[in-house]
Image (tube, rainbow, N blue to C red; front, side):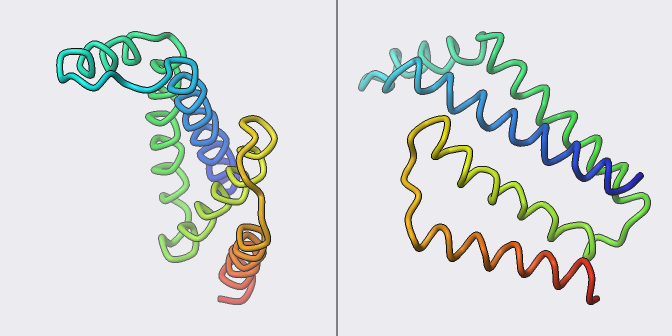
Length: 121
């Protein structure tokens, strides 16, 4: 069950991050003046998508707490790095972000590290 909570934490974290990225992309760059920046941020915070992304982050934290009731932190925490793996690939697919050799090599190293910690410690 602990690994299900970790998977849910990762999925909710990804949803939250991609919802926020999508909404700031739609909103465009913030204005230069302070009043405009405050209005910009307030507009984002009132967006249903941003609210759902922040709620997903909260639920991800709840899942994380539940996972930690069953697993040692030193065993569970490396799994959070898998979020980065998904962000690299989904960012490229959904937002056209750069996917280069360095990102791919780093992603392979992350997966290898998670594998070692999960199965050899």
